[in-house]
Image (cartoon, rainbow, N blue to C red; front, top):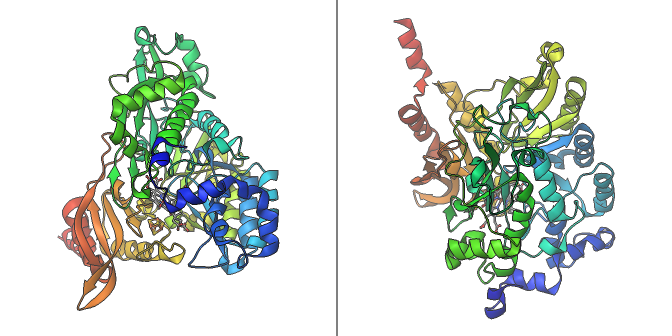
Length: 551
Ligand code: SRM
Ligand code: SF4
């Protein structure tokens, strides 16, 4: 238990965790299934079930949401089929959403089916453990890890190792089941920061150290640092890299919340890949044991760093680690604009391609999921990946199969070449299922870009992110145009509205956007967005473009 928690009064969530650890729920699933959701203890139902990834939805009582864990966003076609079967049994109530953490959530779940669902998950190596409440969220990694000829590090194995350590191989780990608050971890393996490292509580970004500097944490020869890299190691170092060692600069404290949003700050630490798991453990132990627990609005890691100062925090992490941290490398290797991976791209393996399919606002139905699984098997090796933009990647498509793949009907809906607004559209769950939502998001987001794409021509993608409330699950602060749900007044009436964020930059020199316009009623939004797109992003009215063309 924390320093702070022992000296201050506990908030409601700390109390419920102290009464019974969330993970204890794991052994009570059969009992809940027999009882039914209405007879269950409310605290178990509304809160503790989140420790096994089951979320009571006050908007649709009795129809639960299940949040999985997808380390590095990767799953197999067999796993996708199991997920499809689970949502299929709920008919119109069943669907799934790819999330902004490279993950998937299932909807319509009935409590009586949980034992069977967990058995099915177990059979194919899926876990939903510790995916909600005061636990570590899905760990994100590069969506084209192991495929991209330009990658610096294949993040897959490392992400899996961290998840295994933190969740006891998906079975649940009581060591980390009572954090002061949620915790996000990301590892970037490429030059374009595909994971939004800067918005995580703990993030690792590629950085090279001069070999001579690599002394105090461990005397590691370059070969040791490279040995953990997984497949396709040939292109991993830059040409002049004989005397450089690959590792990661460490960022800490990034988070979004209703009250405060912060980009992560450098810990002034560099770690070799083989030290990443230990560092994650050390940081989490410090957060678990010392993080502030009195006020839920002030419990994320950055609040502890504020309270202590970075030097004390770093020293405490070193003490848990049992060794000194090396200072950060002078620069990281994030020097590309962020890619969205939509389209077909050559892999580093000769003759193979990966295809990025745009899944509008991440929403999938059972038949889509079966079809994605089929495509992945017929054309690839059965592997499927998710991106933080709520899209999918199908890797390992042989050159000889590509032309046929491109004629598949599913690609008409899940395009490899969508409109320039559609390809970058992201939306959180919103009012359809989320009780925090101040507005409906997903359908509105789709309808809005349809109209805008009909009216305007674009020369480049514009990243529009919708989020239904200030919790910022849809990450409006990283968008070119971020739309955050709010309530606003017009002609004496309360209406659904948005606050508009702009200036978010991803990839190299990433920084957060800020709120530029407040309280626009959704019914007045379209002309305003049109104006912003024309003035700030080079969009042109189609009529105008036609006239110019005619001259
Ligand atoms: Fe989130 C709470 C959905 C990514 C910040 N988030 C919720 C809940 C669980 C609230 C609830 O119980 O209804 C939402 C579930 C709605 C539902 O039925 O789907 C929810 N969050 C989501 C997802 C599904 C949005 C999406 O459509 O993709 C994302 C799931 C990710 C995952 O797979 O684990 C999701 N949430 C995020 C992100 C983005 C990220 O991680 O990059 C953030 C901002 C980053 C961060 O956390 O620092 C985010 N969610 C929050 C917060 C504010 C946290 C805070 O410190 O105050 C809450 C509310 C809370 O925790 O008290 C929240
Ligand atoms: Fe729900 Fe708000 Fe998160 Fe959207 S941003 S999923 S409305 S909590």
